[in-house]
Length: 283
Ligand code: PAF
Image (cartoon, rainbow, N blue to C red):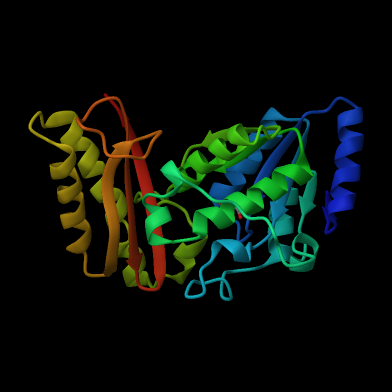
């Protein structure tokens, strides 16, 4: 496995890979790997001849009051895990490599980028879109693997690739969960044992929401959102609930009726960790 820190090195290596007609799989990450990241890498390794992982904690997607400084970083351990799952190339640039001069260009989002995370974390999705556009420009033609845990991020990245005609085919991958339902996240390590136990409420509430939609003919978009919100705020370790909603899975807007391809999404602060989760249901 090669570890590269410069954009030119990555471009040079990938040019050679493509010369020998090999396909490229790409997994963008911010490091601090857990089984969720490793499952994306394994899938890329299985579906492509050559797999690149980028490991870069992107300051653009954190607001000043968020956890950029304390976000877990352990490149040596991350690299070992990449090697174990068969990754061919890790791109781990320094901030100066990615931002050599103050940026003039940044992304602006509308529609599905403005709701949910767009509302509660202003600038976050724009920061994601800007760095992913840059990373896609560096990596070039590839299959790019993203976890469904960040459902809205996945929708934004799909729109980014389509709207800007970028040569990345975006592949959404299933959420990896702990046996008790908690979605794996690098931020779970901020939780105390008590908060960790209570954090399963997000998944419990979402499953309750799906049950209501499937089994209760009286359920409405509003009643399902209210039932999920009640469960979440009743959990002692939850500091704040940002949202617990049912939306159309593509537009991320509330549907007029409980029908079609729906996504239930929740975001809440547990201790100092802001956690998100989602489930899909098709009617
Ligand atoms: O999902 C993440 O880890 C990040 O948002 C991403 C896509 C690597 C962009 O920094």
